[in-house]
Length: 496
Image 1 (cartoon, rainbow, N blue to C red):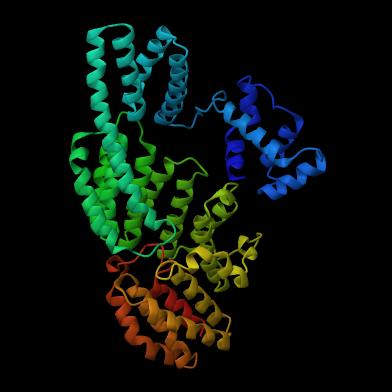
Image 2: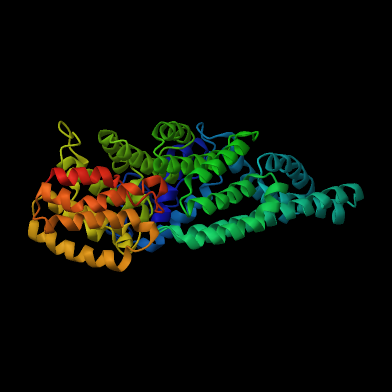
């Protein structure tokens, strides 16, 4: 169903009509489109149920396949160059559409038309760093001028260009593969990984000569992201900021607005600002990054995550609540990857805790936090409940601090037994040091009889250990410690 949700969102009836596109193949296909577009269905089961009630003779799978084929064909007809797109985004659609037309003309032996499209397309693809398309066009022109027209000069000209672009594309593909090999480890597991540091160093050494030789979009995007991972994988934020600054300077000098790279390196800079507690700079970077984003894209949601963390770390809890509302009520929230939505569940839990403490004002409106159910929370985050040294830490900590707030002492003690075993088993390495200290502080509370003064006295040793390793020196993922433990500790003490 996810692929249909995406296609229906892209291909609107308004755009189909404006493009003079042919109508839907039949009434059931049109009906399925409408119920998806209007938000009545989100799953195959829901769509099948509604379709069978209106068209009992139809099979859902046939209609679904018919709609997919229709919408895929219409992608080549409807206008995709929307007004808010930057030049490179528009060029991307135009180049790929023209490239597809050129390939059809080649197959039809339409030599003159092929050369006419290819000449213009080659210039555009090189101007916007579409190296793979440029290579294919150069090879096509080399073949046409060599084997068909017998133009030796043109054959040699495009032969030289094809060889150069082949080197560029090979270098870009290697950089992309090596970067992806590194980042795949972070998708569903947020614990810091020191081994990535060594791999990133090795991979960067492999691609650095190409990075210095080829000044193309993909080469510098993937290459600089690998360089970022060298430092960010061991939480060296100052060095990471420097790499991001160099990357941003490179892409700001392009002849077009390089949205994706600038978004990526602004985002990494924001992460560093959170950990270095450089909040004013972080907010300024956030403004620059969000100005490049289309509302509701995956990266737009990732920026909202960092805005939340920035707000938490500046104690701007009401601002954080406003961001949470914007995200959870967004029409594209439900189509986010499961791991991303589960992380928002963790953020929602901490916002709920802040509301319960009276640190967020939700009066006068229907609070989105009224949907939150503590009993369902652990079951709604199964991916990270298995991430033993990553995002399972804030999940466990939330459950403890919330039970303490609810004065459920026996349940708190039961959970403390589990977290004590967890601490012994998992929280022994550098990347969980601050979390280990904070959990030790929490374990003191039952021993002190849930008494505030006694708790402060007994936990003082661990508080000093925590403060001795501030966030900017801690070797942990920025996503683990949503609210700085120093602030969270004061909130916990306030509930005793």
